[in-house]
Amino acid sequence: MPMPYGRELHEIGGRRRGSWICSPPVSGFMFPRDDGERSWIKERLALTHPASFSYVYRLEASNVGLDGSVNSLQLVHYGEESTLVDWSFELDPVQGAQEETIIDYLAFLYKSCIYRIEGAIDRASKKEQEPWT
Image (cartoon, rainbow, N blue to C red; front, top):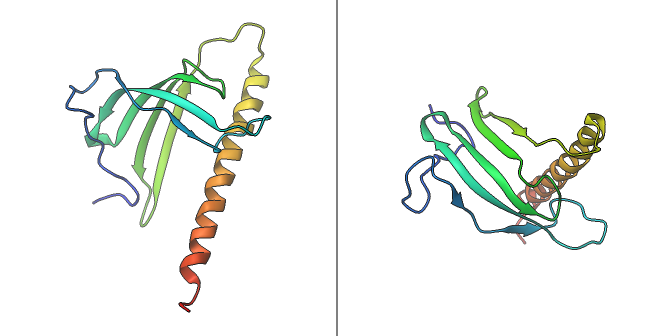
């Protein structure tokens, strides 16, 4: 049974599975910045596993922090018309930082990201509901 919103993960550029492959930098306004500039990230794909709809990537560089973190994503069938995204990450210890501070930062970072996605979905839904003129 195919999962809603789940695309099959493919090997990139014909390289063998498990090799580190660099993706192009991604930029935009997804992550908040005090200076109002675009945020950007450069990731490196570490592993894909098409049968389990999962992949692992490393954040190589960014202007949002979290450089060097290793992120894992897996899409899980979550009932009719739903897909659960199981996400985890590993981060090297930050000298002088406390766990609570890092958790607060991550919560702010990803909540703002989620709010922007929700806003885009709402705008798209309203646009679809507009009558043709």
